[in-house]
Image (tube, rainbow, N blue to C red; front, side, top):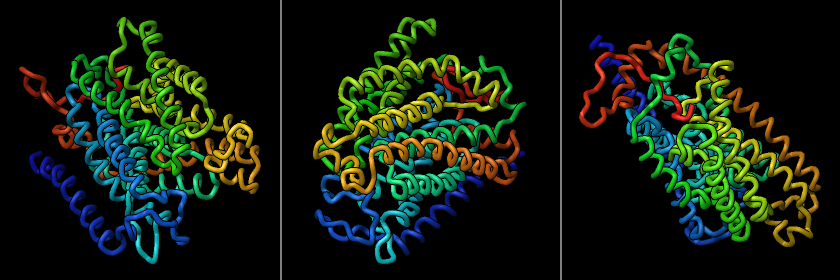
Length: 458
């Protein structure tokens, strides 16, 4: 058994060394910083749908997006008080590798110039968005896969996520600046399908009451995560909007939506749970749902009234999903959604896509004025009608679900291979350092029983 444990430790160390060495070599051969630091016209060789003509303006956007990915998403994964710090450690590992890998993969699609990948603030923002989708997917399987499997998930999902984004945004011309589809919906359902493929009846059938956490560390992480969501998510949603007018709409619509969704949680949670005041984890979920629903529609003419209505409705749907739909996912569909990404990202992303489709139908020169060219350039140029644009916006939703399902099934099948998966007992020992954090005044558990991560709201 000691040999088994040593092999488990070396497996992660060796994979990290191999992947990082490969990344360094690829960067040495392919990656170069963007030519020039001042605003300049986008070279015709590059796909300018992901580039801004003002590199100085992109710098704060990159900072906000990066802080949002690292802190808000990282703290979202810190659900259980006994495994919270370990979950954050896993999220940092995922983020560190996914950003590097996404810069390379997305560089071939969007930032390839003269045989080299052009690296700048906007390419980093794009990589952060892809990393966010991966972190959402990892939330669906957190605590049920080893760190080695998590790295393999990143390795496979980043190219699939990039391909999906390229099809929607570049080939189809879908408007999704805040990434309702390419981040929230794709990331959530990709992770759910991986969870379904990895379902283990004997392992997942343990008493769920024993898996719930009664500690207070969960709320501590949720407090910090929620604060960062409120501060940085509006900038995160608008970070790919290339124009100031569109950005202002995205920021304001996101703020109105998240405040309404938060209030909705205080209305519904006391009716569904015994506590008179919602727990911070529930407020964090509502904040995520309220911002996710504005992903596609944020830069559109939602109006303050419409953003409040959308946020309020999704704030009601999120706790209802945890209360009624999550048990169905587990018992009937055999999907264990550890962090509840279906309710905080999947459903709000789908609703955001439907809202964006409806608002596209209302996009006219009379309602948008000169901003029509900023939000729907193909419609303003006359190369596409409003109904055609709306049909593409709507068609992007089933395409996203299809690609996420296929990609998740493929990734889950790879993760089930014996080499990265290893035996259940060995996998538990491999995860122990990431999962077991003794509470103050207590000793680490010595009985070798594994505690599966599961949302505290299930």
